[in-house]
Amino acid sequence: MAAAYAAVKTIDASVHTDKGFFYLWRGGSSTGDFMGLYELISVLMFLTWSLVISIVGYIEASLLWQKYEDYEKNGKEITQICGYKFLALGFVIGIGAWISGLALGDSAAELLGFFDNYNTKQEGTHDGTVDPDGTSITYDLTYHIVTTMYTYFVVSAIAVGGYIFGFMFLGQDDMESSS
Image (cartoon, rainbow, N blue to C red; front, side):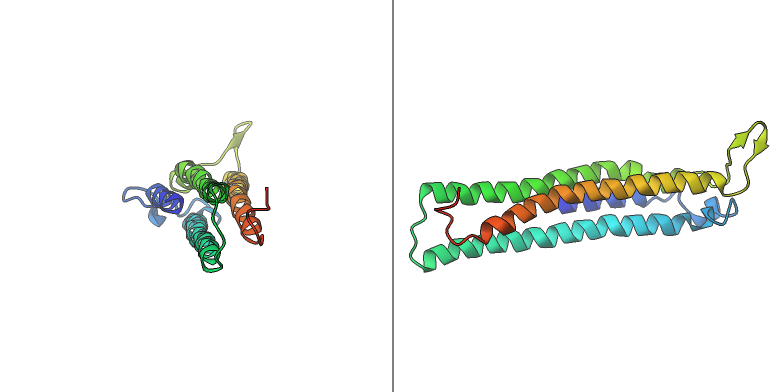
């Protein structure tokens, strides 16, 4: 669900019928002429994140279910405390992905909306002198890409933390002896 939420928010933030077209931003600077490419790369990164989070979540759920079936097949008794450990593990894995999906989805409008809303033909002025074509967008795009990448890294770290915890816990031989 987290992956679907982030993907829907990504599409909502990037697909428009009234702005973000090449004819609107072309001609301001050579850097600005590639604004659509920068947006496409960012959108593909967000959607790839959603795909990976979804796949890894299903793998973790499958491993958790397999561990449960191994307990049954080997005749091990699944005690109440063991059941709570399975439940807690599922929550840690799921909530890590959910929190990161919400964070990425909620920030998509601002992070991806930048590309459609930026005026590539506008340049800054200093002491009445207009900067050369492409000066403003070079700085603004650099700052924005760094912000987007860092956001991407932070939300990924949240999800990966839950997944790593799950993989480590599922790799233990006996959940009864673990604490």
